[in-house]
Length: 264
Ligand SMILES: Nc1ncnc2c1ncn2[C@@H]1O[C@H](COP(=O)(O)OP(=O)(O)OP(=O)(O)O)[C@@H](O)[C@H]1O
Ligand SMILES: [Mg+2]
Image (cartoon, rainbow, N blue to C red; front, top):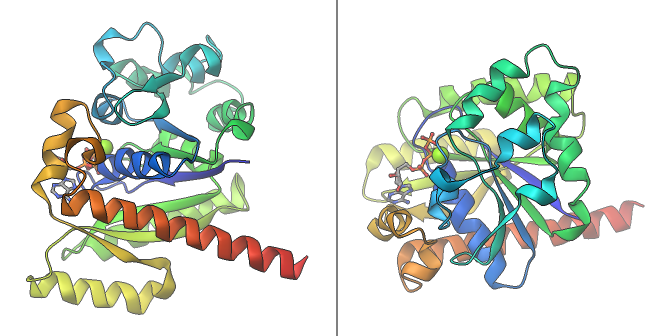
């Protein structure tokens, strides 16, 4: 049964899409069955795994509005070796069109339930907002992965997000957990980055992944070729960091399963 992660942070440009695409490819290379869900009208994750968002007859927009089934929309990324629910700017309209519809927060959850047995992980790339699309992701997910840059205002942004997660837990998804905080575009030479990183660890403890994603130009270049970095430059520091993240996430899952068995 798939474990579903929402990769989210309402702050823009923190590495959500880079993480979604490259973690998906890193899982896929080890044989895991992956579905990447692009839930951002920018369609960056779609483009980043080699699917042209401008040529889509149907996209996740049609799924959320109940006009198509998930099977009709899923595409395969040849460069990433995983399945994709693609998005483009049509999705921006979903917010308005869903506003007076019943169960609008549950649309993605209901659709993913029909394919959960086909995957090991579902990764949802969220928009930089706490809107109805993000709420759909947080309602569908088992856990939240929060990419963040270690900058001055980062902690404030994360505490807003944690409050939203608490509200979703209370109203829509009681089992929602924070899986982990991921330090992205990290520069170890920056004193500020190290200070923020320490604060993060003091505050969130083991929720902070040991794996750190360094600033790496290959990660920024790969999307313009429609490729995850693992295909574009597998030896790069960026590719190696996302492989390490995939190993860490899998190890956490195994450990959690072990604890669940002991407690059962
Ligand atoms: N580790 C990294 N090293 C270098 N560049 C990176 C790294 N991670 C992301 N980038 C670049 O930073 C920019 C923002 O990254 P990305 O698109 O993943 O963020 P995002 O949180 O998805 O943004 P948005 O909020 O707009 O959806 C992109 O140009 C991306 O290529
Ligand atoms: Mg993005």
